[in-house]
Length: 101
Image 1 (cartoon, rainbow, N blue to C red):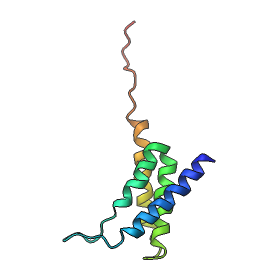
Image 2: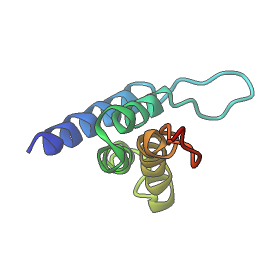
Image 3: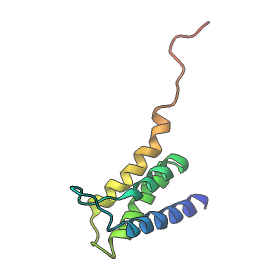
Image 4: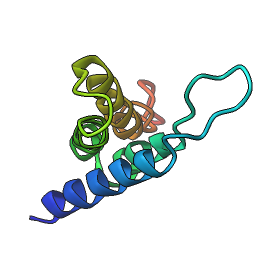
């Protein structure tokens, strides 16, 4: 149940940040979306599944009222959370094959 709350809260936060920063741009850069840190941090703190769903659902929630649904962007934002959440599992310190026996 806790993960569902994290997913819902993170998705709403990500969609809100995307909608608030929709018109932020700099010279030479078409789109700036600083909200990408939301699925990244949700993935790191709550795990890869939460990170993926926050990125996917939050991107979908912010794009539907503005641009329409683009599955590839939503999937890409979900993968950001998934990879960030998977990193602690892949970089864990493992004991060496040689033992001190």
